[in-house]
Length: 550
Image 1: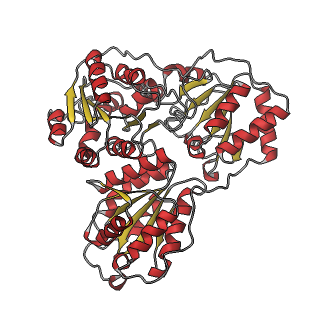
Image 2: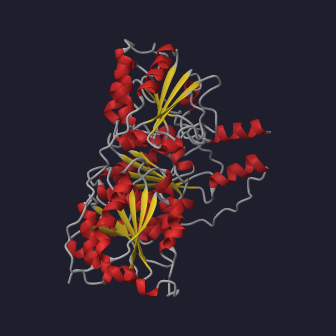
Image 3: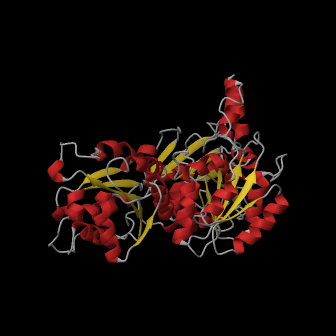
């Protein structure tokens, strides 16, 4: 018997969705039955939040739309952290929830939840399916909205009785195929002004954000920098859009970047921001651009233009289209590029040693040296992504390093790394996170074993919310404001779920264990005890900001 769930699965697959993640409930069992009948790859997580993070990582690394499902009631609110991250990081998702049965609307049946009111602030759009006949077109519309313009999550609420109800209509319906083909091009008059500005610049800098990733404009960026010699820094979300071995790359700038890259970026007299919101971390808490520098901002989301920066020129355009048109205009004007002023020969990374042992910087540097060039790195927020930004070098252009920079949420790295290993099994996958975030998601260790995910997770364990201790020390004078945790044997926890697990206490042991883990076919935890006072690279910039306020 065909049900509304069958129609929904068919419509989503026809719209280009290939991967589904979620956690079942009574109201969504018909959906799970339809997924199985269709032979769809569905990954069941152990929490709704983790399922959302898995879908997020899948969409980032595949470039397509992923679906995450959650039952109504107490389960669906747990999707909110993942939707908040996807919304702020422009990740195309469809979040499917089972709504209140049409016959029970307003009667407060058990687990009733006002999904649309709850999700609206965290998604691009929230769509309710009014009846079974509208299932195909509403599902297709959800996918179109998720990928069009600035991508993001779309909520699709389907009354639970429609999921289970028999359906006699046709499976065919209006479908959306892939990413929106429309690329917004910059205004020609504004482009001409930018050309004149760049041609007069002595120290121009291009800062590429996550919008370059979303546009897939890796080739356009490489061609542009090769042709005109403009150095390129990136935000964390833009990390890897240009290989960090490229002579024009200076690596990540801002709070998650290296000291050397920021020192150089502060000298730029014209800064061209492409595909970036230029948030507090990307601007180094307002230090970038430097005093007297002129900004140009390019973004596909018109609402982001001038929200934080005060650009002299704001271009509403797709990143790839803007790079193409700007290169054409500069070439037509006869400009051959700026004098080489950076003196770089690849991304500027901080020295791996930071005075402690084991040094997280040295460990991340070892990942660069020992892992294949196309390794995918998934870092948690907080200090883990700072070490990844400042010490890991992307050797190839493309999506290779992700972190939840849109929300700063810890607990992202483990489920996201598992999903990455599942959707790109040919790649080496390494997760990096602290014990605070790991404790929020460690139930997903079982998901990795059950699904056959192959990955290495580096757990940096200081038995505390280490960043909070550092912040409270600088801002409030109390390094122990947040209490430390009781020691946890994380290797025993991991082994209990079926992982290989090792504790290492120095860089040499880490390298030996990493080599073994990379050759292993199963998941491996590398547990690294840290001193409680270890500081990440971004903390110096935070400390300087606090001192300036004082």
